[in-house]
Length: 184
Image (cartoon, rainbow, N blue to C red; front, top):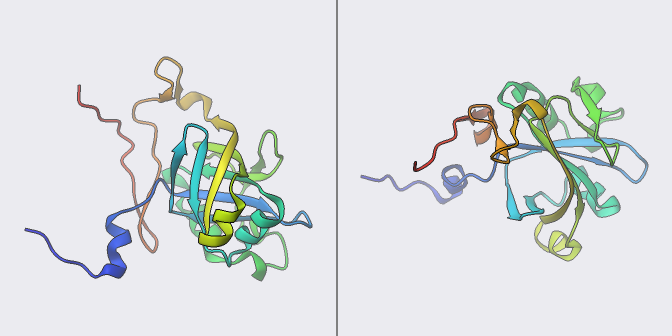
């Protein structure tokens, strides 16, 4: 038997990709970060991120096009919530300092990224018109970095049991599996 839920709750039954943190810099070089739940791979080297066009992150992307997308681990829920609880334009100082979120610089772009993430992607906006029209941010991955001790070279994937990425359920509630399953 199924329960018919309200349409405004449909997104909670059909979640996007893993919880991510998106990092940008303003045209003045001020770093910003936010949490986002709506994303997925589009192609082997392209990602889709769905963002509110009114966010500081969206403004920074329009003005600079470079972003870093990080996949936080299940033990980084406090940092995810801190990044998602304050609007970048409401911070008179660096948002990471104000929210006490520890970051490190990404390898090539030298942009902040949440320290200890499972993986991160240095990306550039690939379709400005789509982003302006719909808030759909199609980005081209320029570099992808994963935690070395979590990557299996033989299968070219995360090692069994270590991908503890989060999926947003509602408000401050997340789920994680961390277990790889197959039909074998």
